[in-house]
Image (cartoon, rainbow, N blue to C red):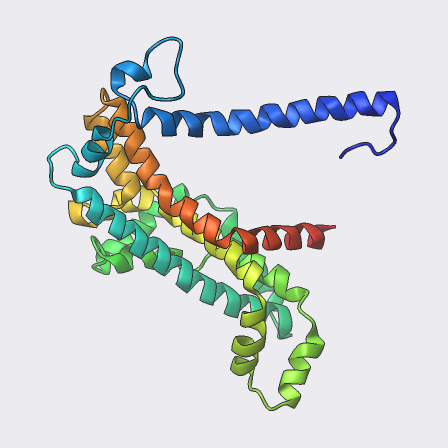
Amino acid sequence: MFLRNNTPLNRVTNYIINLFLVFILLAILMPIAFMLSASFMSSSEIFSMPYRWIPSRIYLENFYRAVAGNDQSFIFLRNVLNSVVVATTTATLSIMVSCLAGYGLSKFRFRGRNIIFLIIMGRMMIPFEAIMIPMYITAVKLGLQNTYAGLVLPFVLNTFGLFQMRQYLMTFPDDILDAGRIDGLGELGIFWRIVFKNSTPAIATAAILSFRGQWDNLLWPLLLAQKEKMKTIPTYIVKFTEEKYSDEGAMMAVAVLASLPIVVMFLSLSKYFLQGSGMYSAGKE
């Protein structure tokens, strides 16, 4: 919180706060800037002292080795496609489930509503590592190993997304819903034509978080996908860095390529994401 009174003490305090914020910003951006600049350098230049942030020449061979892989099979492209399919499908399905469940839990009164919500929220307290072995055994028995369904289905019920949507829809005006009922809309019509289409900031925020969560998910694909053609980007990076640990430029290049879809998605939805963040902050106040 910045001090508004323009006294000398407050000006000094604000100056210290600004310096602290700049330091935090640099600490966040420096690893990203290093990853980006190093991806265009040779390994010898990366370790040159003092470090030069701008490469002496653009070294695109790093990106070729990152895409070609250790065995020149270009399996990277298939793994990117897998991550896109898994993250996009999971985000889409989890948003639909979260919206419908959040709508039901926020706008309909029925016996056991609060208990159901508490049970769902209790799921958030259980770490994934505690349940991944039972999930793996279940998936194997259902024949979901090395399938998109096996990678997607366990994460369709996104408890944090459901919590977000319920909290947002609690503030959605009931008068608008009643106006829809008077106009003859059914509950599904009200949900789709009024609630869903007027919840873009909340949906975009939940979609970005869900997509990012699945794009970065390492443990579950590592367990469930044994075939190379079904692996995702995080598992590819693990294998690539294990076998190319001395090729720092290629490792930085594969990290840059793996980050691009998240950056593109965030930039395309940043307007709604910021609206959603502001909305939740306002709700907390």
